[in-house]
Image (cartoon, rainbow, N blue to C red; front, side, top):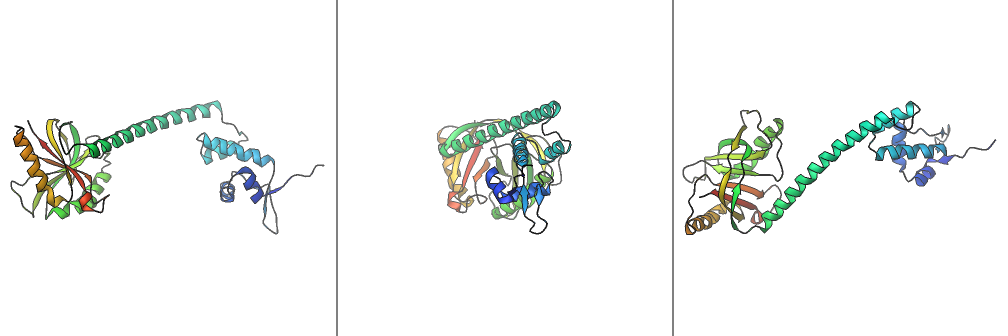
Length: 274
């Protein structure tokens, strides 16, 4: 009788190009139990037949089958999925493919939007589409309070409500004070979302109409210097014969959340005009 070939776990690992850690995990899951375990040394040995079994496991994983599904196949002595199982996996794969395509398109749009923003002239005239926003209006003590308000209050509430924000991320503020004040600022924060939600004590959903024409001006630097950009923007509006017809928006592109140096913060002031 021919002696059965036995491979130590390290040898088996090298030949099959699978880590020992993975083999031990498969053993714990009941997927690939060593053919023999030495009673005294506890050394694990694998057989030649288990090479094919491991290959089957890896092939099925590559085709999207979970370890639980693979285990079920082996427990029922069927190492090959049925036509029904393959059909279901094809349907799952097609759904995942559509999700990946949608994600890729969103990422492409986001990247192109970022490129456009970086290369945009300092002043441009653009149209702003109709959007749905999650809005929060509150009188804040000063401008420095806006960041904590977003991170600690608005963001968690939007997450609780299940808000989905389409890329590129579009958030902006509007001030409702009739005159400048460094304190007690009547601030409204708006974040674009995909659909109307259920209002809460913190968040109200609203649909903002399209703006056919808006002066958009890039502002680089801390928010305390917004007045410099407003001077330039309103001078341009006057020189070109435009008229302001709505509340200015301040859209935030780069800020404290991704840029430590305030001198590199990028915002866009958007002023409805006609």
